[in-house]
Image (cartoon, rainbow, N blue to C red; front, side):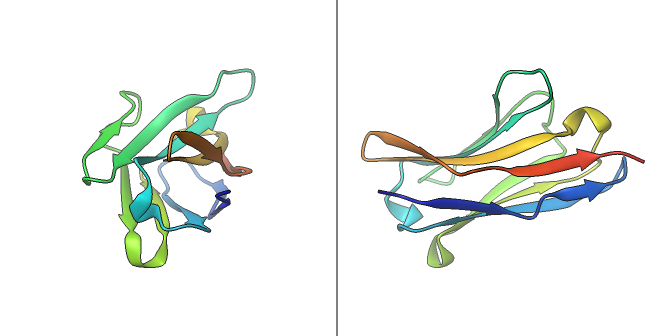
Length: 115
């Protein structure tokens, strides 16, 4: 069983930045990949960013150039740096990880972009 806990969400003005963190109970070094997803009001959950164990990354087109996913294997933590935030980025952001064929999810952290 893997537990994932997100932190770092909050209220930010348009154009601002936030750094989300996901702390894992197990070594993320053993994961196939770690993701950040989001689910906005009335929307389906969507992938924001993924980082593989190799360090390779992919990003959603809507956020390319504005977000960076990174991992700190020593601290079992994955970060999502988000810049130039827009109101449409308002959502609950979820961390997930693929471990030994299973996907685990955190509880999510709310990000609200509003003036």
